[in-house]
Image (cartoon, rainbow, N blue to C red; front, side):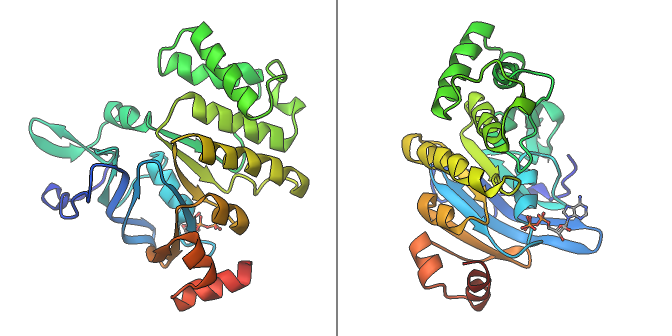
Length: 271
Ligand SMILES: Nc1ncnc2c1ncn2[C@@H]1O[C@H](COP(=O)(O)OP(=O)(O)OP(=O)(O)O)[C@@H](O)[C@H]1O
């Protein structure tokens, strides 16, 4: 990763308290001349459920991809659970993070994508146990026990031996949720997880996520066009426009009395 932030500026925006799990400090991301994130600052406290809303192309998915290190910032810094994702300490100095450091920090993060991304040649159970065995070093038995519990939780306890293509899109997405949770991440990133589903399959997936939000202490950062879902699960909603957070607040405030004109325009178009 090659973030060119000057290390001396990295602590210009110190944590407010020890419970912060994600912190973006002046993160800028460009694609050519397109400035997608413009010195973006925001943070997510541990255990909270935060939803990102905003017009198409405003950079919501880019934020999740930065956290997964699928892309890197041009400048600024990202911290996860107090550790820089973008930088590491070497010989007393902050330098751009190497692969080993990135892998360690990323163990805290699970992501569910729009397109499920299951391994097509592996049965459902193996899809879920693969990373806990190879990355976390769990024994096969431990990983399978945990995978079966998670499959029960997402309502697919009887489909361990199916291949992904034998499942509906909604079922595949529920396996993908179980797979992300199997790594015991502290934060779950959800990127428009129902966008690729037939309408009749959306409710089942959202119900599973509502249960997870209600019954676990996992932190969630969610991009969704499902505003009712956002209203149900979110502690805080962030409205993005032109690469920055232009307004944030509780779902009640954001959906019933937004202050910013752009938020009002956006919500009147989608609600
Ligand atoms: N790999 C890339 N190369 C070039 N441009 C990109 C790339 N990825 C994203 N972009 C551009 O960055 C901008 C933000 O994209 P992003 O997917 O983050 O937006 P979004 O808010 O998630 O949009 P949507 O709600 O439509 O999914 C868009 O203009 C997009 O075209």
